[in-house]
Image (cartoon, rainbow, N blue to C red; front, side, top):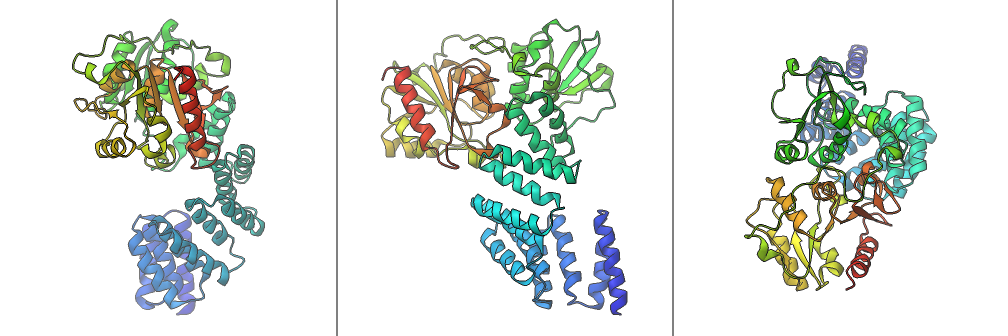
Length: 494
């Protein structure tokens, strides 16, 4: 019986390596039916449930595996992985430490513990653990990849780069390492290498990669042609605005251009680019209407190959929108003081928290009585504003007649009516930069700072009207906040 079970387990491992979870699970159920407390079968069964996203059930099963064999260090490490996915970070740390105690030469336990410490913000500890894992097994690309992520969070760019390069040396098609290297390349103005590696975004996991259109038409090769070119939307609204800054380069191209964008941007883009056909990215656009296609984020390899290709005016480089007087209904919000638009958070799922600032942290700026603050933050922030207005005895104006989340044109109109804008990295920043509005941008350290916020002497390369103010220490906004306060005092002589 034992030899038969071992044979079936070998088959299970074969199926798992091939990604055939269904066949692997069928065999595991056979084993567990015969021997319900078989620790290794239970462990592998929990791994399958975790891979399918059923982590609560996976946790129950891995706990049965541990009960069946309390000396199974790998099972404790697997338990930690599941706990980490469930947000049980401290419990995961305990599981990994137990795994290391039982299996001190199991390299993955050290790397997994490093991942947990990254979640806790203890990056230095994580780095030491990844190095320990590498010392045990120097051929596992994930260990170098995790090490690169930790270094990136500390803005240790060269160390991060070397770690990602080591990853690729072992696994040349490692999409995540290539993608992260692209971010580092582009951030450091290495556009030729960066744009090339940036194409790896299409090979990321389903949850990470942008949505692509279903097309059989060839991708544009960057050459002017008398044909029909479809430039299609990818990523978020801010990204689409950023990439659209390259569309003016097509002014002297013979192509008939169709551009798809998020439905919230259609009206604005029709005004910005009257010579292009602008469509909602949610609509089907038949192949019969275009000869070549390209995702909008891939334009850079042809249109922004180096710093010199930017060569942009300080007023912004989108066609200017009409900047008429503030609508009579909104004039009451704009007093005789300096009108300062303010936005402080990002709703981005993965990195939004690191890019956001609490209103209370902005107290040194919000207490500046010479400024009339206008809320530009989209989403439900009314209670947050009322609380801060009361606590700080300030007055952030809320234009409640407008839906700043659904109606981008309203948000754009407010931005254009302001004298200056203060914001974190979010859609507001892109809209302000798009129209050449003087903007002061707060940026986090590490991988939460997107590559396109690279700057030359504190001025954004993509949006010349934006000045950037960066964190010096991870999670600490005090230095850039004081720097913005000092800038405002000097700029407006207050």
